[in-house]
Amino acid sequence: MSEALLDVRELTKNFHVPGAKGNNTLCALDKINLYVNRGETLGLVGESGCGKSTLARTLLMLETPDSGSVRFDGVDPFGLKSRELLAWRRRVQMVFQDPFASLNARMTAGEIVSEPWATHRDLYPTKAARQARLSELFTLVGLRPSDAGKSPQEFSGGQRQRIGIARALALNPDVIVLDEPVSALDLSVQAQVLNLLNDLQQRLGVAYIFISHDLSVVRHVADRVAVMYLGRIVETGTAEEVFDRPSHPYTAALMSASPHLDVTATAPRQRIILEGEMPSPLDPPSGCRFRTRCWKAQDICATLAPEPRAALDNPEHISECHFPIEPTRDEPEQLAHAS
Image (cartoon, rainbow, N blue to C red; front, top):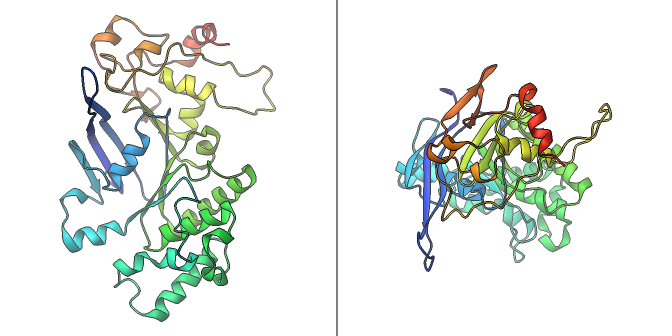
């Protein structure tokens, strides 16, 4: 933790919702705690509306938190001003979900990738240096340097996303936030882009925050996984632990819903069916926010919010649950709620 590149503590973000009946304050992020190490990939998963994109926007300083702290290399970016803030913005970049809408159709691919240098002029001060770096970036993401003169309309979806990745790399960042970066692409193209991201990480040492609904993709790319539910991170751990030995009931249900191919399995994977819908973030349940859909909920879950609890075999595998899952003991109970 002391060597984490990005360290988030108790981060909270509220939004005012005009015209809402009763409570008009939406708590999008509720005391978020997470960290990202240098050169690793943190997968961020959860249902739509749980706060993943709001968290990404806050880490990019597109939203200002109401409380809590963000430390990047030990520095609070929200306290920076002027030149210091401009220098910090180089270090965190983003790749967007839609490779068609995220590229300006009136600019060439080369202009899109080199546009950040118009603001950060000292990075590549001469035209020759900018041209050399532009050619290097296009080659790095699997495109030809001659493609720089083409417009976005001349590229396929996968090629457009490569341009988006090249743009994110233009300022030599330490962290790249990837918001559903392959969801709009065909499966074969998804594999190409994911392999490219993995190769770039190994070569450049960049860290990723990988946001996705596709759990199979997250399992393929992530070193660690954080699971969000209704504005809170309910479980974190290595990808292997979270996928194979989930501790929080919501995580177990989420993982059971993911398509899974195991040629050695003798029985089909059991599915955990959750009852009810996700509560409104304007009126979240008291105590544990997941209790209204949880088969393990008891009276204490309605009155007391669970504290983070580490697994017995690994202090880095943490979940927020009064009654975390123990696989051998809870297996019959889970199967009773499975289809």
